[in-house]
Image (tube, rainbow, N blue to C red):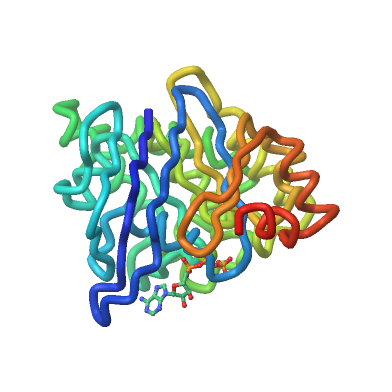
Length: 251
Ligand SMILES: Nc1ncnc2c1ncn2[C@@H]1O[C@H](COP(=O)(O)OP(=O)(O)OP(=O)(O)O)[C@@H](O)[C@H]1O
Ligand SMILES: [Mg+2]
């Protein structure tokens, strides 16, 4: 599904290198968790995967189903089936969430050569998906993310994800700011989407999320490199011991 090979990336504006040779493989159907101290480059990795123009790749490659995505525009990456949920979702004042979802869904269908979804079908689909995530139709009439609470933004993201039917979902700190009930709702939303053809890259600081979304693999990113990989027990180890010994081992 995903192969990141010796990825180096820097901030376009000042040339500071943030990713210093990331290697990571995520298989079809795999849920991979990325952990690591603040400032390690986790969000940067998700931005680089999205194709955000603030970052430049200087070396290495990102392969999605064997094809490099580095030359693809962000919307082409999305149409290929890569979905990114960011740590800080953008607010779009003046655009009702419903309209945004419909536009996003239809632009992807178009890019895939499928027919646009008609409004009644769309509303039926959204209603079903929103209900499962505890999102009211009233919330969907409001501008995207504008004035949404932290938890509402995260739920709205999962809704978007479930509607777009992506192959690879990259989620940056989906747990931050969620109360316990919302954490469950969001995790169940993710778990419902798990399947042999869909993979997840879940960036998180806490074992708590991984109790709900149980990962197949756990990777520690530190100073722009993956310094340790393991299974879910690695997350438990980090929760109990912090990063010091893993960082020490790698040094
Ligand atoms: N556009 C930018 N301009 C300046 N510095 C940046 C930029 N993007 C990233 N950085 C720096 O790169 C480093 C990695 O940042 P990043 O947001 O990827 O860390 P992170 O692992 O996601 O941290 P956190 O756990 O706090 O979310 C940080 O030191 C950050 O300040
Ligand atoms: Mg981050």
